[in-house]
Image (cartoon, rainbow, N blue to C red):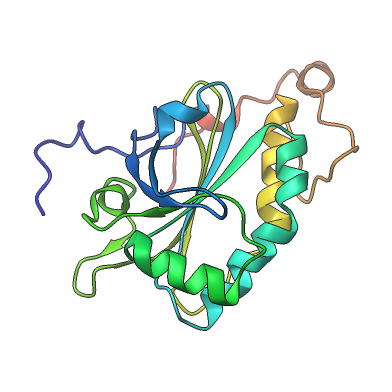
Amino acid sequence: MQKDSLDEFELQVGHSAPAWSATAYQKGKEFRTVSSADYAGKWVVLFFYPRNFTFVCPTELKAFAASCEEFREVNAQLVAVSTDSEWSHKAWFEKDMPDVQYPVLADTTHEIAWNYNVLVEKTGEALRGTFIIDPEGVLRYSVVSDLNVGRSVDETLRVLRALQTGGLCPANWKQGEATLQPGAVEQSQPEKEPAFNVKPTF
């Protein structure tokens, strides 16, 4: 695949997330087209996994399923994606993961994985990409990891909750903890310039 322009496929936190639409498998429902527009006004956790019928992937899919209610409580929709077909999803999930109830997209054209810059073109599979999109469709969080390493669902939920505070969350912030108050810092250290005004020395 070739990008027609940098702007068209630019993926950057703080910018609009690429729209997506694909056939989805979801337990108890017929195959249907699911799109990003279906979740307007909601937070979306869009996460890619490499392949069905593998080893690390089911541990992640089950972990997200176990925390599904916690995501639902904070107005967030889980959506999984792989480049397998909807029929492959149905066969695998019905047999091995009946507890997974969120939609799983069949990105058979590879377009979604390509737009989110997680496609391994040589094998046609996706890297483990996790993306949090806010209710306005803005990408707020993006993490991509190696195929062999499963992600932390607890960390994804922590970051989602932190983003929803709208405040400044320090390292290792957890739900219920206070956010930082930049005004107080600025008053106590008025002579210090913001870090983004400092000229790099490298």
